[in-house]
Image 1 (cartoon, rainbow, N blue to C red):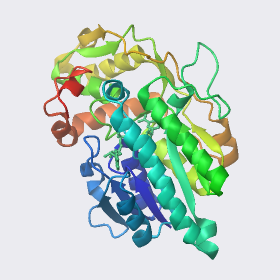
Image 2 (image 1 turned 90 degrees about the vertical axis):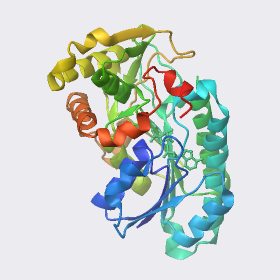
Image 3 (image 1 turned 180 degrees about the horizontal axis):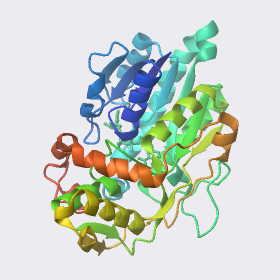
Image 4 (image 1 turned 135 degrees about the horizontal axis):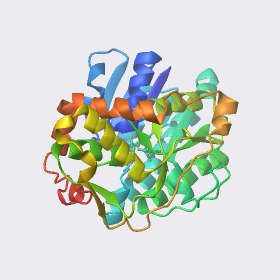
Length: 351
Ligand code: NAD
């Protein structure tokens, strides 16, 4: 099995690449532009592995992408490359439209040309998985869950650009008959998560004795999934998901942001007692504009149809994650250089 993964130097993409090479022994080509969010240190354990190769390329560059298709000859594409940080999309949406919309368009067009020229078993085997987010569905009230039938209602430039790319993927399946499947997942957490995102930011700021900036009153709810559970789900969906279908991915782990931050503080109190009580570092800051109140995923279709199940519960997953950051400063310290530790300070640093 030969899999072309885009965005494999990012948080989820690197977990997918590690899973496919190490656990599945698949041949993988990792195509990544190495933006500020991509680092090859997340896949450096694969260096020298004959099943793994890397191509530095922009998914908007049609020539580079079509050459990647013709030289690597993938059986499967898992398209994860994206601009992914909501705060950055609010202050600079252009990169999001370019990569998430035009880049996905380029991936679909290059895949179409490649797939149309295939014959026999190779053509029958080919699959394209478009990886997306539950944020395309907008915000939930106190009750209910996002299902695959929930209408799209994105709030941020990030989620709007992802929604646009999902529609392109669906249209390429319906119009051209391409073998495409779409997945929409809830918030991920775990090792190799870029230090600007909520959980790693809180762990590292707590370690450094810096304020822990929480948006608004902290009651926004997210549904957390351990990244390795997502990577396994994506492999299963790419392999066995029905063409033209959407699969929601989530771990049934709803938590208020403030409770996540307080749990990180408790773990830091145990693991880094010098700085305790870390909860004293929590600071409420002006809310993010258009901040969705609640996300929660109904993953029944994926669980019953394809037999996937989240293996990690939030309590064990968050403990593993905090420990990983404490033991792997070599990975995050270079990525954090120039940051002042505030949520928007990450943007001001221009990294
Ligand atoms: P990330 O920001 O950690 O990684 C994105 C990767 O894409 C980086 O390695 C970056 O260098 C690469 N990239 C960006 N622009 C590119 C371009 N133009 N050409 C080639 N490569 C480019 O993102 P992530 O959190 O790993 O998310 C991966 C995918 O999963 C995204 O499509 C995202 O929308 C989706 N998703 C993320 C979450 C989450 O909680 N992080 C949840 C659901 C879905």
